[in-house]
Image: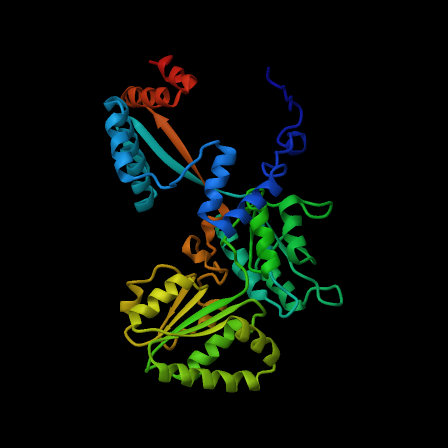
Length: 425
């Protein structure tokens, strides 16, 4: 019935003896890609057709009506409904306590704590090619070490000579990187996730990169942990008003655009005169820049000067864009922060250019891009930790929860779950 795995005599050195984990997507990747593409193009009609194909149900409307939900609640056995309410209250209370304080959550014979356990091995990626980014090495390594990661490795694209530039290697030394590999692009992400003859697989991959790097992370997420969702080409949105010096706004738009192609630079203002002044200043600065061609390419393809009706509308646009960097180069920015919903990092006032955050202000410059700030955050120590719940239950706590658990398990048809509680009663 059970396959026996005898690891006696090997001490703790047993990793090579364990069965390789299954790749849950290996045999369905193409089919899933086709489904995603279909939903992207046809929307609701694709959902209806796919439901008919896979679930053999011919739907007309996807959303369940509120009246239908209310009718279902009325039909549910009151005992089951009460059990659902008890379980939800317990779950909510635990997470409320966890969010407010790291102390144990204690309720009537049940003690739940959580242990923060760092991953064993982290992989950092620092871009190369168009520029060198030793600062990214520091940003990757610092939170990993704070979290307690034992091994931190680094992949960097080699220069044309096949080497890695001295400043990046010096940054790796300062940041306590254990291993450095001269490999870049999607292939570096694949190597760190899957392992090769030279590179042992890691548990978490962090660091910014181009669209190929970001896509490789997306495809390998689940095989390896990926922090700071879609940390891809650089982005900035600048909200400006009549108090904003045009030179400040223009140079700060250039700061992120000079990182390379596929980036994004938005100017958002309710004052057309401000927009014109910044656009004129930006044109002058780009023309005089040694990186003129690169800046023109990025700004032409992804640069936007956005006029809105009001400061509130400017913030609404920014929330929709969800930029990696947001600069509030305006007076009285506090009222804009009240409505902040999505951004990787926000820089407030005339003396807080995003470049301070890129290098030395302290917060991480590895930030979510491509609108993923809607659901993800800047890189931090927690990205290198796992939070493991530890549950201790007294006899009185067991007796208090047993009826609820048996009721819900019975409702789900999971009889072994019911019996695991019943046998202890």
